[in-house]
Image (cartoon, rainbow, N blue to C red; front, side):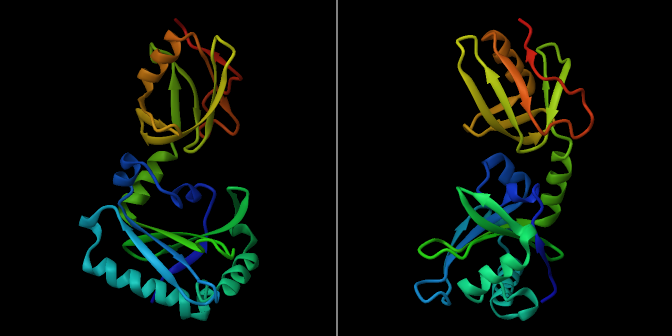
Length: 238
C-alpha cells in the first residue's frame, strides 16, 4: 500500500478529535475508528463510528482495511499498530509527534493516500484506548484547512477589523461584572466561528452581543497569522 505517514503538525492536531457538525461536513469527515491492544498489548480490538455514510464507499472501506493492516504489519511504518510496545517505541522515535492531551502524552500521525487523509492519535497506556483514527475525504479537508489558515476575524459592530486569531486560538472576554472567560475558537468560514462551549456565531453577531454587554474582547497569543494589527485589548463600542 502506498501512503505517507508523518507526525502531525500543530495545525493538524485539531482534527485528531471529534468536530462539530459544521466542521465535519466541510472536511469530508467519514468516521472514526477507536481501538485498544487488550491486556496482552498485542491484540487489536476496535470499533467504528460513522459520520458521513455517503463518503463511506466500497473503495474507502477497502483502503481503510488495508491501511490498518499495513500499520499493524509493515515494518516500514513501525509497524505503528503492531503492539502497545511498538506504538510507544515508534512514538518516542519521532519526538515531534508528541503532544500533551488531558495531562498525558499522545503521539499524533497523519497518513495520506491519494483520496483520503487519516489522523491518528495514539498512546501506549495500559487500560486506555490506544488509538483513535479520524478519516477524511482529502480534497474537502485540504480546502477547509487552506481556508482556515486565513484565521478567525474579530470586528466591531460596524465591521471595523480588530484582530484575527488562528484556527483553534483563544480569546479572553472581560465582563463588566469582573468575570473573565477564556474561550477556544474554531474557524467555520470567513464570517462564522464556533466556540468551545458549542456556540456558532456570525462575526457581526458576536461583536453586537459583546457590545450589548459592555464586554472587552482580547486575543490570547499567538495571534495575527496574516499581520492584522495586534492590540492588547479591545473594548467593543456601544
